Length: 388
Image (cartoon, rainbow, N blue to C red; front, side, top):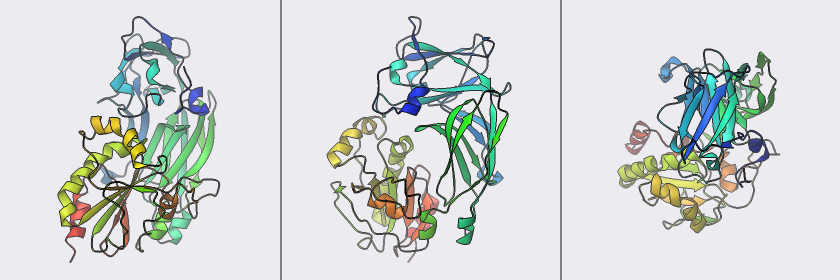
């Protein structure tokens, strides 16, 4: 594979060894799953993220393994262990052409699996993956610093990564995580409601039965800001055509701040929902402000980066609300490990460590809560707008 600007060393190490295959149609990838004896594995699930869900009953989510795919459902290997993947089954629309994408293959009943990564250049080729026995990765989670603030840890999420690639996850309503993962070198990242991430390097050796890592999650900056005056919009290096504004000037309005990036799939997929919220509630007192990270330096550059997603995901529509680009000055997040600098002044003042992050601010300028920008926010927003 040619070296791509979006691939780091860790991701490159797990790129699948794809071979040119004249039997594979252009735009498709053929995978064959075999076990350690070289025998084909029938019925293995293939996708880009394996979720071992552990939900609270109130969440109304299915417990157990779910394989996420870019398509409607995860694919299964056939009798000969093979599966043919379309471009849309693997690669997300609107992202850079050389962007690596995760692949996980899991046989749930046999508890064997494999993982890897591919880039669009792999289309028209084939690869063989050897499925190995899975290792149990688990642990209990606490947050003593959150408890000191009088807040409870009630929702946690653990993710297992290679570089920026997210391969395995476990969302839990019981302050724990429990996953089955194939051998490899990983980074375990765990966070919860109102906490920063805690990170741990993992090396899973073939044949290893289990790894337990209990973690104490540090309260994040947002946990210390809820109920207080929201930090002012400062250090912005560029605004879109709707021009600059301050939170002080927006007093009396409900404000939704959406921290996002063009490179973030969930971010760009959430923009149409924010457009609908703007159309429905702007005249009733809702002000949406998108805060883009400082990976771009100008609105012209941002527009160029979003050209494809605008066409494919946004219906050709420009963003109808204010968008600001965070300042270029690298700024440390108070309370976050000093070796990490994630962005500019706005990211630091709000303590943003994951994208997207959307925040509601009431008419008095008080920071209320975090919300998901792709969700139906009617029940969150309308009561605020109805306040006298």
